[in-house]
Every structure is written in C-alpha cells, then in structure tokens.
Amino acid sequence: MLLAMEWFERVARMRRWTRGGERDPNRVLLLLLALGELHRRGYAPLRYRDVEEPLGELLAEFGPAKPASPGYAFHQLAADGLWEVLTHQGVGSPGPDASTLRAYDAAGRLAPRFAKELMADAAVFTQIVRLLLQLNFEPGLHDDLRTAVGLPPEPAVPASVAAHVEGLLPRARPDVLLRQKVLVAYDCRCAFCGFEGWMGNSVVGLDAARLRWGAFDGYDDLSNALCLCTLHHRLLDRGVLSLTRSGAILVSRHFVGTTESARTLVDSLVGRRVAAPRAGFPGPHRTNVDWHARQVFRGPARTS
Image (cartoon, rainbow, N blue to C red):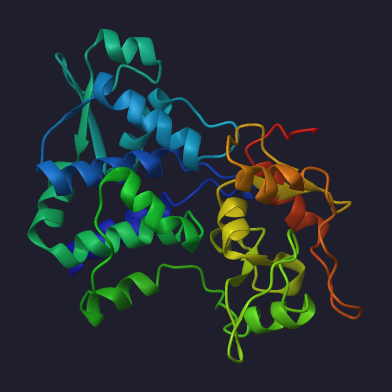
C-alpha cells in the first residue's frame, strides 16, 4: 500500500489549478484517456497524432469553455510524474505545440512504475480513477466520463484502499439533507421548467443541483443549489444551461436539438426567469452563479 499511496498523493497534487477557482482539467482528461486505453488494450505508447482528436473532443465536452489545446495536456502531464513523452530522440517532450508533437511523431505513456502498480492491483486502478473524478468533476458527470474514455462502471474495492483515498478528498462533508431542503424551498418544482412528480408520498425526478461544484469549494447550501428536474440538472452540469445574476436562464449556442421535445424542454428556456425560492429561503448567491457561468457553461448563450 505504500507504493499505492505515492500514486494517490501525486494524483491529488495535480487535482486542479485552484487560482480563483478556475478549472484546468486538461491533464486529468488525458490521464483518464490513458487509463481507459490501459484497461482496454494493455500498456503501450499512445501516439500524439492518434489521441489528438479524441483528447480534443474530451476537452471540448468536459473542459471549461476555453479549453487548452491537446498538445498542452500531452506536454504538461509529464511534470506530474505520472506520464512521459517519447520521441525518436528518447524520453522528453519537444514542447506543447501540436504541430511540433506531430513532426516529432511524439508518443506518450503512463510512467512505467505507475503502470506496473495499476496493472498489478485492480483496487488501486479503481481508486486512482475515482480520485481523478471526485477531485475534478461533479458526480453527475462521472458515468459520462467513464463511458467517454472506455472505463467500466466503478466496482467495489477493499475498505482499506478506499480509506486511503477518502483522506485525500475535499474535507467538506456533503449535506445529506440538502435535497430535502431544496425541495421545500422550491415547492417540489423544477426551477427551470416547473416539473413536479410523485410516486406515493415520494418526490421523483427532482434533484438538488449545485452551481459551484463540490470539487471546487462548492458547499451544499441553498445559496449554491437549485431544485431541478433530472434532465435540467444533467444539462446544467454539462454546460448546456446556466443563469445570470438577474435570474435569466442561459442556453448554450452549442446545444442542438431538432425534435419538438428539445424545443419545448430546452430552446424555450432562453431568457426565461428561473423560479425564486419561497419567502424566507435564500436564492443562488451571485458568486456561485458567476462561477458556473464562467467555468461550466458552454458559451456563448443564445439570444432567441
């Protein structure tokens, strides 16, 4: 476990660029892509020209609105001690420029000791993936990310391994009553579309959706949460939807939906006012609204 702890700690140190709460998941996404390749095909170098396109798609889909280039991630990940870049001249990156990486026919691979440890212990592999996801993305995106990079659903791991990882996660504990508080504050209705649904005495299809992500100091509090239906929660986390300080709903121009239901459920939200909570309950704080609009929303917003 001592060797495993070294890798857990290195992953935790690279977790994100924290200045101003800005997201910088570029190296994380490359590492997840490499772990997916290791899981499916075994240990082998990944040529830059082969991963440039899929990495670019991951950056566009799960990174901030202005992601760095694939070349930046390919070059920079080596600084974390988990990755190395190879050219015909030996180990060492020729730089972050994509055209240079292609010209040198650069390839990257997981650091040999790191890969050996991952292949030797499935529990360590599982917890490395979990740590990367927990420290950089909202839980609602984890399954999407696993699918995108070719990783299976998370299996159970020994409690001893899980305990080591728990100690590296953010200290703030989730509020298990947050959903209940949000439901009460918003009268059990989606703040975007007004949906409500019940099965017996249980509310169904409604979530407590955070604006500022838990991995980026987003607390489980009504000032950082909305009551949203499952669909609009997912679209909020993916950056299709956001809102302004004044409470106007934003819809990304990048969203494409050709059916009547897409027009009804998404396009019609453009400019609509988000529902306010009941009197006596706080609405979203402007700092959390601003963070989501800057760091998650895939702008620009539609105007009609």
